Image 1: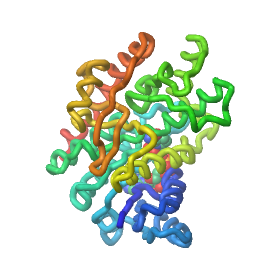
Image 2: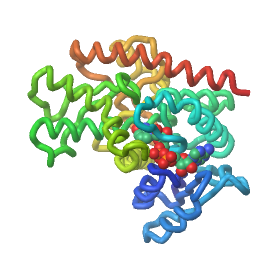
Image 3: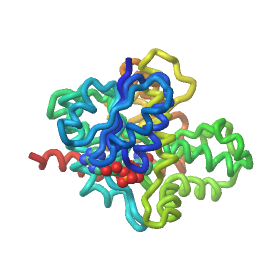
Length: 332
Ligand code: NAI
C-alpha cells in the first residue's frame, strides 16, 4: 500500500502530475490537496481505472492533515510560478511561507515521507523544509529532495538535437548538478552518454540553453506561467523512481536531485573534493534505495570549463540557502 500526496494539485503542474501519478500502479492511495479546486481534480482523475483510490482535500475540515496523514511520498508543486522578467528568486516572498506551512504539516502528519519539493526557488525552499523538519526533530536528509529532473530532461532533449539525433533523446544521459536556477544549473556535457562531438562554443551555447531553458517557456507562455507539462513529466518520473527504489527495485537510470550532502557523508566526500565545502546542498547523482538516498555517487571527471561553472553555482547557492535558513530562523 503506497500513499502519495500532491500539494498544489489543482495547479498547472499539479493537475498533469496527479494524472501521471494516477497512471502508476505502484500507488494505491492518491491524495490531492490544494487551496482551491482539489475535489474537482480528484473526482475527474478518480474515474481512471488504475489502482489508486483518489481523494481531494481543501484547507477546510483539516484537509491538509488528512491529505498528509501517513503519506509515503509528498510532492509539492504549490505556490506561484514566474511571469516574464521574473527570476525564480522573485517568487521567494510568496512561496517561502507556503512551503513552510506545508512542511509543518509534513512534520506533524507524515514525518517519514519522502518529500519532493518542486516549488521555486528550489535552492531556498528545500532548506526551508529542512529547517522546519529539524526544528520538529524529524529531519532525515535521505528523504528530502529538491526536484531538478526537468533540467536533466531538458539536457537530454537539447543535446540529442545538437547531436543531430532528436529521435534518440531518451538515450542521451547528461548529469546536471548544482542547483535549480540560472547559473546554479551545471550540465556536465563532457560526460554525455553517448558523447557529443561539438565545438567549445556550441557547448557554451548548450550550457546556457539548459541553464535558462525555463525562460523559453515563460516567454512563450507570455504571462500565463512557466513550465507545467514538462515539469509534471519530470516530477512524475522522479517520484516514480523514488517509489520504485523504495519498493526494492534496482533502478536502471541514475537520478539527480538537490539534497543535503549529509544524506551520505561518505559519498559527499568525493563531491566536496570537486565543489569545495561552501555549500551544504547540491544536486548530485544519487543511488536511490528503500530509505531514499542510498548513496551520493561520484561526480566523475569534470573539465576546466565545468569547474568554472561549478564555482559560479556554489557562489550563488550560498546566498539562496542562507535566505531560506534565515526565513525559518525569523519565523515564529
Ligand atoms: P500554478 O499557479 O499553476 O499552481 C500552483 C498551485 O498551488 C495552485 O493551484 C494554487 O492554488 C496552489 N497553492 C497556492 N498556495 C497553496 C497552499 N498554501 N497550499 C496548497 N496549494 C497552494 O503554478 P505552477 O505552474 O503549477 O507552478 C508551481 C510551482 O512550481 C511554482 O513555484 C513554479 O515556480 C515551480 N516550478 C518548479 C519547477 C522545477 O523544476 N522545480 C519547474 C516549473 C515550475
